[in-house]
Length: 336
Image (cartoon, rainbow, N blue to C red; front, top):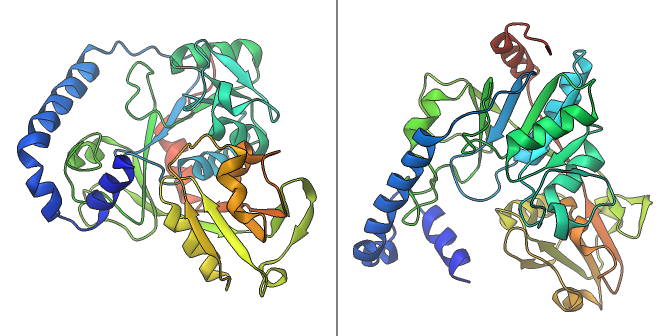
C-alpha cells in the first residue's frame, strides 16, 4: 500500500506535499542516487540498431498514462499509410526471460497483460523481451514483411536505438515535478526537450518545454462487451439502475472511474495497483451485482469472476498530424 500512498502524494499538487517534506532527509539521498544511476545507465548503454525504423512510445513518469491505446492507434494509422508495423514490449508482469511471441491467448503470467491486449487489438505481430533490441530482431526474423517497429514503454530502454520518441502524459501531468522517490519522474522534465512529440491524455502540463510539439489524445469509450461472451454487447444505458461495481488496476484507476461517471453510471469503486495479479478472492465483492472493468484488467480476470462482468474498451483519438510528423522524422526511411 506504500506505492499507492506515494502516488497520491506525488500527484496531489505541483510541489512537495507536507508528508514528503517530512521524508525529505530520507528520500533526497535516494533521489540523488536514482538520478546518478539512471545517468550512468544511459551513458553506458550501447544502442543496438534494427534494420527498420523504430518508434518508441514511453513516458518520464511512473505508471500508466495511455501508452498502450496510443500504440494501438499508431499501428492502425501506420498501416493505413502503407507500413507494416510490429510491436515489441518489456512484458511487465510476465516471467519471459528470452524474446517470445505474444498471442491473443497467451498467459499474462508469462508475457504480461498489456502485450496481450496489444496482440488482440493492434492486428500487428507482438513480441516481448527484457532486451527490446533482441525482441525486435526476433520479431523481424519471424515476420520479414514488418518494416517499422513500435516499442511500447521503451523511453528509458537506451539499449534500443530509435528514430522517433513519443512521451505520453495523462491528466496528472508531471505531478510535483520531483525525481523518484520524492516524485513520479523517472527522468527530469528537461528530457522532454529531446523527444519528438509529447502526447497529452488529458489537460497538458504547462511545464512541458514549449519547443516540443504537443498532441492531445482522447480515449473514447465504446460499448461494453461481456467478459465471458465477447460477442455480447451492451450500452451504458442498459446498465443504469443495476447494482454496479467497478474494478481498475491501471496507472490511474480514477481515470476509468471518471469515464464510467461520464457515462452516467453509479457504482462502488474498487481500485487495485497497476499490473495487479488477480485471484478469484479479489473479485468476490461483486458476486451480488454486475462488475465493470478495463480491457487491461479483463486480460487477467477471465475465469475468475463469479457473476456478470462487462468490459469497457476505449479507442484513442488523435490528430492525423502526429503520423505526418512521424513520417517526416523518418525521412522516408524503409526497411533495408
